[in-house]
Image (tube, rainbow, N blue to C red):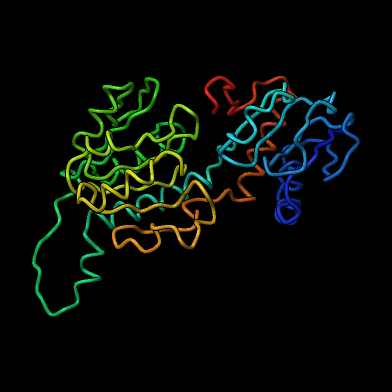
Length: 310
């Protein structure tokens, strides 16, 4: 029997995904029909981007699951018409890209690269950085991405702690949770990496109070979600010297408006949401594997908890 798979995303995504998805589904041994249009009552699975035209799932009466193309699900998780399982994208290509981006910016701070690049004035500043083992890095958010980043940083020798809303156990990482755990995680963090999901409970995780809990001169790296940071509080902390520098890849409004003060601030690095992209080749393998599993009565991977929002 043929499995009907609807690709519901922007047209340019279809151009990127049609061949990799076809290849991955074929290699998974699935008899399928993959299209951008079906009669709703004929669809078995939806490969989905939350900015697609599909917003009402109620006509899809035979639907078995919605497979999100993005790691973030905040724009679909609250849709009351979606009653079948929703999976989020946990893609090894995306994970590797995130590891590389975070490692690069962590090492940039750790080694003082900005100072050397900006200090070509004839002055011999013979100050070596500490070893990684003496640099404390905290990762906020210990889901799939956060855990992978924390372990990669620890693999380089950094003194890594991690914090999450619920208890986690990750080999080689000091894992903290809860309100007091957050205070402890921040209290010694020289570099903070934010990889929490975007939920009402995580909004403004870094605010005036929590920024003040960091050691003076700490650096911030945010490739997670824009709303994790109170922008006004961060700007004030940068101006006061409490925070030495912030590298920000995600924002409440994207593209970041040209008039936003982050652009001109000398202690802020803006990158245009490039920390990691879902790669069509590897994401297609994840989607095909989940469909194969479901068709064979195996549990889906990466199912979203509707209550937690991720």
